[in-house]
Length: 288
Image: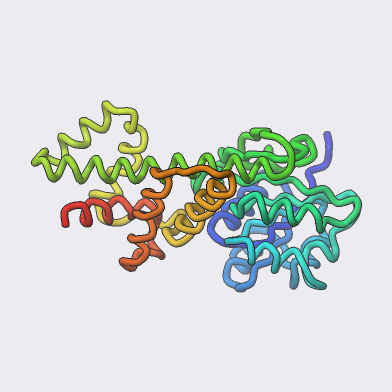
């Protein structure tokens, strides 16, 4: 049996923390780094060890996962004397798992030290999937190279070379944001036409949106949902979709409209709420 590799996780937001817990439960030694100390302490109490810089984290592991918020944050943790690239050893691999778009990943590939592999592998799924090891991992690059770690986190979906993983994630996100927009407008339409909300849910349960309707019903009716993915981050991801589409010469009116709903919900003060709060926002705004 091959030894379970040591993994460093750089970035302990909600997803980074959940992935760290999963890696620990599946037998990996895990080293963690984060800008703020609170999640580091939580991970250490679970059995991880801490590093003082991303460079130190990289020096202590065979695999380094970056799970950060945006392209500037990725550059901040990879570059400079304290960055991952300064200390990653030949034979190690950097698993870039955040949603940052293909451009920053391809730029990172140009900066990689000799002998250090880059695998572009963003994930689809939320905290429950990360905790249960059921994420979908879109792999651009050598999937076999990353498998000793990624198999602990979910289903590996090879999609091509470095850069393709990030492109695939944008395709997946475009469907998710669009579905939420359509679902919210359908609920608003039912309300506006005088259907009892219970009847609207029954209709949606018989529609192509049945799975999403079932998942979102209870949080919407309760008026709250646990924050698994913040609305402000959803706007960032929607912007990445539209930026990539524009670069490819594509016009995507539905993706643009979905982004508009997300952004207006953030402007209303919902940025720290779960991204599914856009449904309540749509229902209220559609009614005038």
